[in-house]
Length: 231
Image 1 (spheres, rainbow, N blue to C red):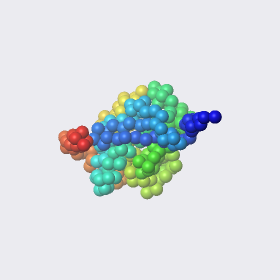
Image 2 (image 1 turned 90 degrees about the vertical axis):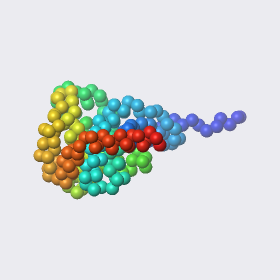
Image 3 (image 1 turned 60 degrees about the vertical axis):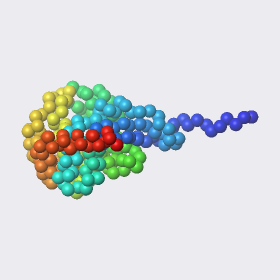
Image 4 (image 1 turned 90 degrees about the horizontal axis):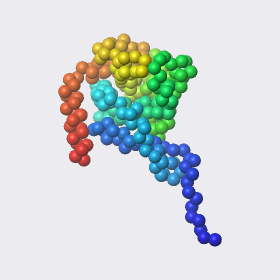
């Protein structure tokens, strides 16, 4: 009887999300890879419209990190983390995310799963550091956040940066149930949350970073994009 060869993989093993990232253009491509056979199952192109946060928000995360005197490598990784922090929302029903009115308590409980869902999606060694920041980016300084209710220094500093950036983007973005908040009011809300929702030191760094001339930031990003294109 002829040898039929190895059995085809049924892809029933766990899958890992892999990604390629262009730090200059803030472009992220996700794919699902079967852990058993290593084959790429499909590109997660549907993630793009949710994962690609506004580029200036990703840059803001990096600038806050620099204001905190974090190493260059960490600042760049925080920029990546800002880009992927809400990737877990892709596993939630679209009608829940786009609901035009207030969420019920059970619906909020479902939405609050997204940090853990996102951390689970960011498998592989390339995201070993980012994964921990993503899962904690909705923790609060006063311990009233989620998913674990961590407080103060229990929360990774990088996640504390993401918490401020995430709140600022949420307030200044249009939502199905409300209009975007203007820049100045959103800044005041961030400052008001220092010491309760947010780390005071991170809020101070946010204030310094947000006051930087926009032209200087655009210039830095243009240089980065040109360097990436020439590579």
